[in-house]
Structures are given as structure tokens and as C-alpha cells.
Image (tube, rainbow, N blue to C red; front, side):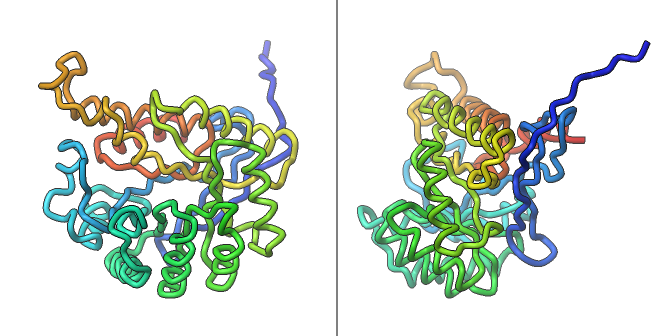
Length: 314
């Protein structure tokens, strides 16, 4: 006798959004079921991995995180090229840490020149991430968007304090905004509605729910992402039917469990293995919660995630 397997029919779907331009553009979203539950729906576009590149030589990184990029960490364009050519990055996320007003306070012109150089070095989609200072990010990302108007960038984080300026910039130059809110579904929904009311097209918005690392708030991020997907798929909430980007690498690699050398605390074990596993575990958890784009750092962690995704998505 044939077995009739029950199937859940979801009333909503995640929008498909094209990131980047040209032959190497990627499409994310399109899910009609919960993550990887292909027995209930479709997941036409597998999750994508963006490797991060800093606009200044990183300080305080664990040796294991620096090792794969030896010789290029003082040249963002060369760094990005290694990520694409050697490690197969689908996308590049340029972290504009030097623009932080509490740090080097680099100028918008300097940041725009860096992004322009990276854009010339690689032809994959680019995410441009500010220093998370609302006022400075507004200045920086507006100039970056104008300077690189021939490339369809993802610019972020776009928050409630600067969504008008950066939303208008995205409309003017055709870029995508990463709408960022602090781990709260209601704030997430509100910002998406504000961007829509401003006139930002639905195919130019992705969600950044704010990401915590393993052991450092990951469960809060997971819970909010899960609720976002539930509302999008089962309640037909079109203000939440957007792909999700998770900028997880900085959160994982800054914690003491990753940065403490084995000699200082032998109980923690091999430092490189520890960091790679913490990044991979964080990334896999976020994929199961609904992430469409992961910003990652270590090639070994990325390899683990690719293997897992290949096993889940035929």
C-alpha cells in the first residue's frame, strides 16, 4: 500500500533578489518552505557566501584568521582577488572599519577609492559595510554609491537613523540596501515598511537581523530569524518576505574563546580548530534559521559550510 506523506503548503514565499551585475551576479531568496525542508516546498537558490575584506590591515586578529591572507591584508583589492581566485568566494564584503569616527576616522573619499579599487579587481557582487556609526556611514555610503554607480552594490548597515538618506541613495543609483535592526522582529518589519514608503523597490531590500556568534547571542538571532520566516511564509507578511544577510565573521572571531592562544589556556585546545569550528557552527545555525547570505572569514569554515549545503540542496 502506498504511503501518503503529509505536505505543508505555505501561503507565502521569499522574494527572489538579484545581487550584483553581469555574468557573476547571484540570485538569492525564492524559498517557499522553511530552510532546507524541500519535502514541503522549494529552495531554488542555495545560500551564498561572501568573504570579508577589510579596508585597513586588521588589528588583533587571531593568527589562524590571518594565515590564509598572508601578504595581502594591507591591500584590499589583492585580498579580494585571493578570496575569489583561491577560495571561490561568491561575493565580497568590504568592511570599512577605517572610517569609524572612534578609530582612524578615514574620509569618505578614501573609502570610496578603496571600494572602487576592489570593484576593479573582482567581478563578483560586492557588499559594502560601514563602521556602524549612523552619521559617518551616511556620508561614506552615499559617496561610495555614487562613485560605484556602475556596480549594483549592497550597502549597509541601513538603520532607522539614516534610512531616508541611504534609501534615497539606493533609489538614485540602483543599489540594494541591507536593512539592519537590533535583533527584534517588530523593528525589522517597521524599517522595511519605512523603506518601502520611501520608495525603495522591494527587489532592492535585504534584511540584516544583527548577528550574534556562538555562545554570544546566537540564540537570540536564531529566534528572531525563525519568527521572521514564519511570518513571511505562514502569515503572508510581505514586509518580511526578503532574503536575509548575516555579517557573522566579525562577531565570531572577536571573542576570547577564539583569540586566546592554546598556551594560555590548554583546556581550550587547538586555537585554529577552535576558531574554524565556532565560525562553521554559527554559520550552519544561521542557515537553518533562514540566512541567504553569510559573511564569513576562514576558508576552512567555508569549506565545511559548502559541504553541508551541498548535502542538503541537490
